[in-house]
Amino acid sequence: MNSEDDTITAISTPVGEGGISIIRVSGDEAIPIVKKLFVGKDLAKVASHTINYGHIVDPKTHEEVDEVMVSVMRAPKTYTREDVCEINCHGGLLATNRILQLTIAAGARMAEPGEFTKRAFLNGRLDLSQAEAVMDLIRAKTDKSMKVALGQLDGDLSRLIRKLRQEILNVLAQVEVNIDYPEYDGAETMTSKMMHDHAVTIQKKIEKLLATAREGKILRDGLATAIIGRPNVGKSSLLNSLLHEDKAIVTNVAGTTRDVIEEYVNVKGVPLKLIDTAGIRHTEDKVEKIGVERSKKAIEQADLILLLIDSSQKLTDEDRELIKQTSASPRIIIYNKADLPAQVDVKELQSLVGDSRIIKTSMTEHQGVDQLSQAIAKLFFNEGVESSQNTVMVTNARHIGLLRQADSALDDVLKGLADGMPVDLVQIDMRRAWDLLGQITGDSYQDELLDQLFSQFCLGK
Ligand code: GDP
Ligand code: ZN
View (cartoon, rainbow, N blue to C red):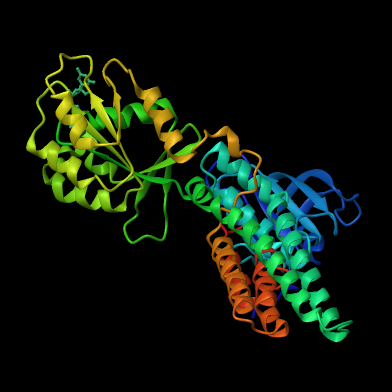
């Protein structure tokens, strides 16, 4: 059984990337363990928070493994609030792994995914929403999602939730007092009025937070976007121009059955997760022949559809069909090849697409792409990206779920009061709201939740 008292070790930098790798060791034995492998100053005697030059040597064979810098940080001012040693080595998979193995041979245990952060939480350095923010940071796809995650790491969300909980606690306390010492006959009426008013204000604040969730989810997961249109309208060209415009982020999503490569482009702070680009890639243009079935599926999955029309040709039945199929989805119609003489019947096009925005582009002349980007950003951040920069945003699915439950617990409070239920019964639902909010910050938490949560982390965090 793994214990919370073990000293743990892991490679905490992405394997195979960058010139330097870090092996992090945390726990009571961190310094003695690394000391066994280190030739240089006596690590047991160096001051805390110092970096020490030396060599890692295999204590059995006396073979030198790598030239290293070792940071020694003593509790409590460390990430885990335990003693921490970080071995900065030159990298290279072999040397890094070898050092990791040596720390294990010297008495450390391989850390579970997220275990460093779990310890930071258990030792009171981070609260739950902050720990989750660490995870979000690792995954953050654009500057803006980075900011939201950093804000949470900073405790914005936690502060807000704690305030709400305090507010509920005050109400519960007052109810308690009024029930125990009814000064006069009207106490019950007064108490239920007070409870009603507070439930309403607290609920408003929760709902305001929930309203940020959609935006937050998009920032976190990306906006699933499908580029649709019949062959030769310019889909590949649009894809390329988006990819060139704003450096694409290609993510390798592990754990899926096929090893799916997801592509993200950052459009004015909105991460677009491009659906099924394999069908659009020129190299796989043969795939486009089975386009109709494929686009149906893409349309179903998409949060946003970019539908291209070739303006240098008359509308075809296939165009009309695609316009019809996408009519229920958020979409932008792209009137492409605007550099060529127009053949398309603009009136017909307008009547077919209804309210949907039409943007004129020329992929070959690289025109209209910026307007397109602006239209996308506007569609998803109503008043532009800047406006919501300072608000606390809920981006995490678990937080959203708990807020919804708290919201409905407050619904029950209001319903109970409306039905004339006695206050001491209604307050049970109020308490439930208080509990649910506490699960966001981890002020009330269960062990399984913790294990499940921290296991989502990358190893070494
Ligand atoms: P897809 O089949 O929908 O992916 O379309 P492509 O992007 O492969 O483009 C088909 C052809 O149209 C290519 O020869 C492109 O160079 C050309 N094309 C794409 N966009 C434009 C445009 O805006 N103007 C002109 N004149 N040609 C374009
Ligand atoms: Zn193509």
